[in-house]
Each structure stands twice: as structure tokens, then as C-alpha cells.
Image 1 (cartoon, rainbow, N blue to C red):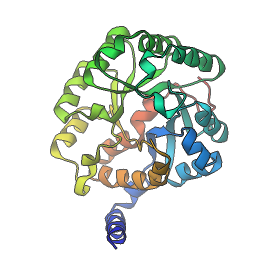
Image 2: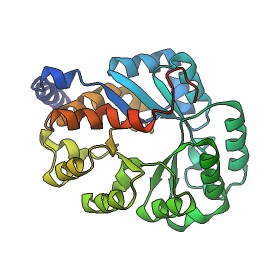
Image 3: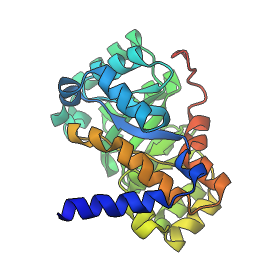
Length: 276
């Protein structure tokens, strides 16, 4: 019964969203289609879910790059591919000290094209280890956006290694808005995705401190679902509608920027044809 009431409440909330907001395109900047998701859901079904959610495009990576490549083949107009340094889910913490990751990255970059590298998990001084440093060097060589699930310390170290880097900060680093603001003021080429930042839509209202941050940096935020487990794929449509709901409380131009224009601008180098 509780689930029914929650679903009804969400439906009523979304029903109150203006039609223009309900039709707002979304560029989902944080999608994974890893080996476990691919085993559960074939590419045609995964693409159908993304299109049903009204996604304009989706930045997709996978543990084991096969899933990403299968989605690119199925929908090159929709999928913006990112190369993750993981072969399997269990490498999230071990990859920074695994020399074989470098071989994997170099091999994939010889055989396929990407718009970004990541999402990768990297914290503090680990950014100085040889494997992450090689990842950054490859990103520089291939002009790839770095999609970093990192603390502020690691972000600083990434920029020290590659001052011209374009970095998409996953989950806004899970930092407080004042800390995010400080980082965005310091680094003009830092963008932030809002995946799992549930406070943005709490009660259908964006908190004042985040509203002020969005207004100060209207071109630096984007939304993302983060399908980090296969089950999260069944929430892509729900997440897109939830995003449209809280975005509808912002000025229309700002809502459009966060919904899709900012991500479209960041990945403008990735052509619809699937080549750089």
C-alpha cells in the first residue's frame, strides 16, 4: 500500500508540471550499461527505455566496454560513448594500482572512438599514481572529457596534470554547494553532474543555496541517472520525469541548460554520426 501511495503521489506531482516542462528533452550525463545490465537487458530494450524517457542523448560507459559498444551500434544518434577503466564491477578501487588497466585503455582507444573517459573513481593522492596519470595522458592525447567520481583533492590534482582538461565531476563530488561553488569559480573547465543529488528535487523545490549556484553557473550543471546496478535501468524514465519536475521550478532558459544544453555543449565535439 505504501508503494502505491508513493507512486500516486509522484504521479500527482508530475501531473502538475507544466506541459512545456513535461516535454523538456534530457541529456542524461551519467548512464552505465555494464556486463550485468547487458546480460539482463538486450541493447534494443535498453535503447527503447532511453527513448521512452525522452532522452536527447546519453553519456554511456560500461564495466567491460562491450556494453557501450553494443549501444553505440544500436543507436549512434543517441549514445555518446565513454571509456571506463574497469573490465568488471570489482575494479572500482583496484584499478589505480593495476598496470593491466593501461593496456586495456590503450587497446580500446586503438579500436574505438570515445567522447570521454570514465566514470572512474579516484580520490586524493591516488591521482598521482602511474595508472591514473597514464589515463590522464591518454585523455589529453585523444582530447577526451574526464568523468571523475572524485573528491576535490583529486580534481585539483587532475587539473595540475592537465590544465586544459575538461572535467565532468560526477555527483558534484557529493560536496556541499559552497564547496562546489568554490571549485567552479576556480576551474572554468569543470562541469558537474547532479546524479544522486536528491536534494535538488526535495518536495518539488530546489533549495535556495542550489538555486543560487545554478544561477551563478548556468552553463556548468547537467543531470544524470547513474544506472550503477542493472535494476536502476527501470528508473531511467522515472528519473527523467523527476528531473523535469524540479527543473520546472527554475527559469525556463536555466532549466533547458541543465536539462540538455550544457551537456550538448560539453560534448559538441562528438558528432551524431558517432565519430569525432
